[in-house]
Image (cartoon, rainbow, N blue to C red):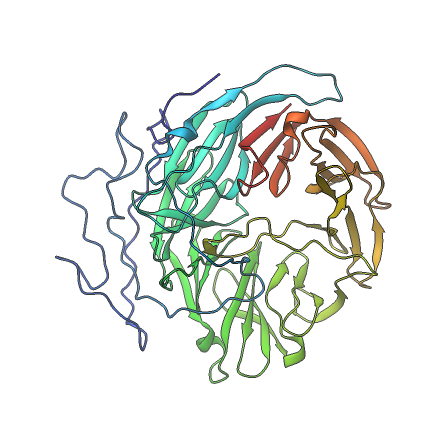
Length: 518
């Protein structure tokens, strides 16, 4: 089965497109900031207003995005460029990748494979191939990269450079598409959603400076708002903000500015800076992560550092923990449970009480001789943004992949899962009973851990497995086809009702943008 329709064609019942944002108050320029000259008929740095009669959404048969530009957006002045710490993606030198804006027709084709296997075998239902690489005038984004993926109803949604695309799990047909406006690209997505609503950020090849809310059920981008963002210089990577959904709030941390928006309508709830929160100490934000009812922000200061817990609804500080130079952290691994990353000069992960920020435990990599695999799968040569680490956790245990080791004469590597006691920092167990391949964690539920063994395409089929949370013993659930081997490496793997959905972060090992097995 193929779907010849362009992914950006307006879909019945799913208008897509980028909404006109509410007008935020104009903020004065920060000292030293360069304010661009006023556009004709507008304020300094503001895009021109929409033309009279311009519809906010496309009509049937027209592309699902407004004409070039984000009408009505009122950007605050640009922020000064800042450095990022350990949570920044691993950036390599050289030329950056390119995005094919408006050339996404290749994304509209999925292949229905079909077939049915035994109860303990998965077969390929359909796949979505990566499009051919295409060069355009933009010089920053790779339109094959994935920024986030979610299951919503009968659809799988993929956030990529040129927009959000949803495909039906049942047959691979395109359900809806919400593209970034011409000349812009998505640059980051919040990984969590609340009641089917989430957030992405987009911008030009010079800066990532606009956040937008989306609804997974309707396929609509519901609001957008500008925020200050550093401008890319030369061949540097584009700086993307830390972006999180925390309950009914969207939190953006860009440079030394942090803003809370309403997830429902994009209304700005609060705004602050590192200097405002810690005046006179020479402190600036290093990292922000948020979940549920807590925002955790880390600072680097002229002397030492700090970790703060912030209310996502008000921006008020709930607790503070000042850190000596020897314990400064580069960022946050997890908010629930609260675990901060190592920093310059030390390799200690710190476990904290989310109510007070006080240290309750720690562990060091390697853990009892076992090295952790802490390389984020979404690392990019083009975008310097928040890392996505692949782990699972409950109140007292962290489940983390171990460092992969080469499997001789196989062309693949293999790893396991380590369970770390958050109270003692000791190893509880290392999983046993895997096939000799990499393991991708899917979820922790009442039955334990669900994971995907990636296999290969020649001899070792991938497997869906359960890992006993008490012992680490692996039990097979279902075997996948050889054609899906390697597809789960550095991918987001999801499962629901026996259907496995694989969405790779990068087009490196993977051949397909989406693989659905049932």
